[in-house]
Length: 162
Ligand SMILES: Cc1cc2nc3c(=O)[nH]c(=O)nc-3n(C[C@H](O)[C@H](O)[C@H](O)COP(=O)(O)O)c2cc1C
Image 1 (cartoon, rainbow, N blue to C red):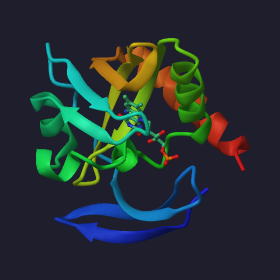
Image 2: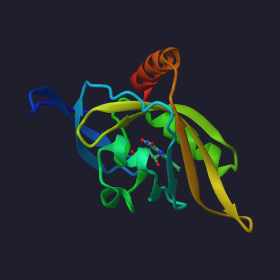
Image 3: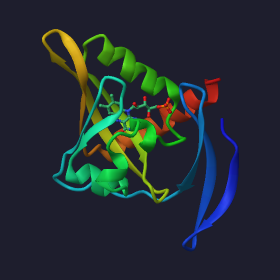
């Protein structure tokens, strides 16, 4: 799916990936095989404009992402995209919320430091006077068994994606 190059990060073995976004643009990201556990008892919340650019991030979001709030606001939400996530997962997300329905799913997110964290996300459209002005996502801690299922499902989906 993407080219990888080994890289040394603070004593940990990281890998550089070329991420390809839905618009065909690419971005080089650092990936480390280290999971950061979902913070107990917290909701990770963000809002975007109608094109998916981050307009609000709560404290738990900022802390888990490893970015500062200033670095996040105004960026495309794909700033957290992990190369292990299949493109079809996000197509389903956008198709669902643009049709006015709620999307729920398991997402592996990439932190600024290259580590990752799993979330169970709910995404809805924010509609005012009949028009979608943006989207909100609220994330909860996923169970380990659901994470394991998502790992297997996403691996299969990545094998078949073009
Ligand atoms: C409210 C909202 C929250 C989102 N949260 C995430 C997220 O946490 N991680 C992520 O990778 N994509 C998230 N997305 C999806 C991104 O907008 C994007 O579709 C995805 O990262 C793939 O982008 P790409 O095809 O440009 O690489 C979210 C979208 C919306 C509307």
